Length: 290
Image (tube, rainbow, N blue to C red; front, side, top):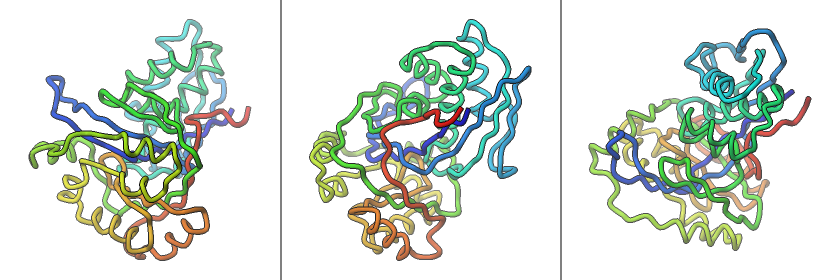
């Protein structure tokens, strides 16, 4: 079977103080978009992983797909093997959740293949043990996230939205960005995602664009100045609002519609980075063929 693994955008990301376990409390609004990886899952006697294009992601135990396989083998009463073929389109080190979404796709696909019969909530719980973004990538759509990202609540969105994503050529490490965030003194403004949630429900594009927020932006720019250039290029090209996703380096801009998004993409500075046009999606990892 084939499973799509959508990228995610953090439309809003407030980051709190570091907890005793070393992680940070966050409040986020997350959105699945139509930039996707694809995972093909076949029954097999052993677990194998093939990635294309070659080198786009590791094929060993460090890949979160393999971590998902191991986690579900532990949780499922009758696991088997699996031959997994992963086609990568979501850039790595960009804050777009590609690895987490790939893991979510593996969980969803293998839950069906192996007949585990786990509920979506149970699959999300397995995903939480793999990474903080995996539960959202299982569920997808638009959701508020609390804790380290594992506590999710669906949000109402009036209309499908169009985005232009720019990925600078310099990938960023999440750990490095959070470390610099702490060095810069952390957040200075209290969290309030209600304005964005209300704007999404009402379909007010201007208000959505104005409410985009990412507390890690300054830390990411300190490590990779091209991030600031990517966001500025989106705004100069006519985006209603622009921000950075996750810990970067990808930035995204909001468009009025598909035609506007493609126009913005054509006007983004040629040296800003790799450019994608994507729309909002209502689902996360999803089986589309079997």
